[in-house]
Image 1 (cartoon, helix red, strand yellow):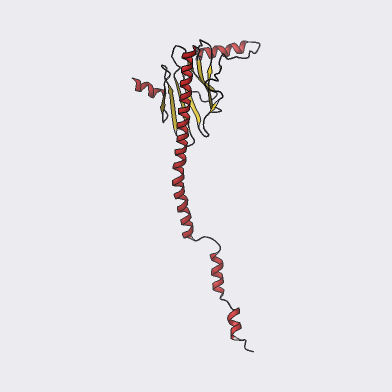
Image 2: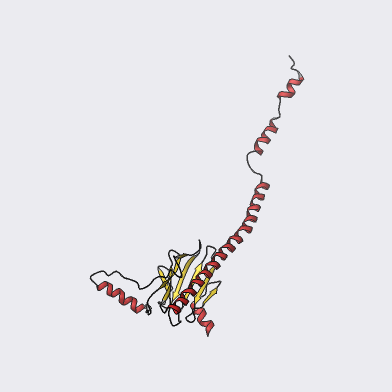
Length: 221
């Protein structure tokens, strides 16, 4: 028995057309993948320099704020007649100003070694007390470096090696002299900044790179 021609036309489909439509839904074409890769590369080229620039601004801002507080500590020492100092906590990334007695001796390698020997041979453990305390007229609380910015190391006259952990100090004396200090800070983009505290007039010089002590000594000659 012959079926009507209209029934055959509505029920029969080409199997090749079905396989083509299914395979096209399985994934991206090579052209589409290349377009996506190109867009990712373009966005990376636009975003990464902006991140580095933002980090540099934070680093610059941190250095200038620290320089301002250092200047205040120097001025306070000359006005009050008491030794002041800047304290830096390299682990927490914090710093603050402290005031102390009218006179203070700086620690040296010999004095530190004698203190360690004294502690070893002392039967009773003596709790060390500091003659310095935070000066709330300069820093009411500990100042923190911006997120991502950290102390790389600090060089002072109290030892030949840079301080890379623990705490470091810069002393300012009533007669106008300061303890030479190099403060190195760095951000996540590996941008470096150096603060140099000069021994006279409490001046802080800023360098938008890492500067070594030997380099400054050579430049001054």
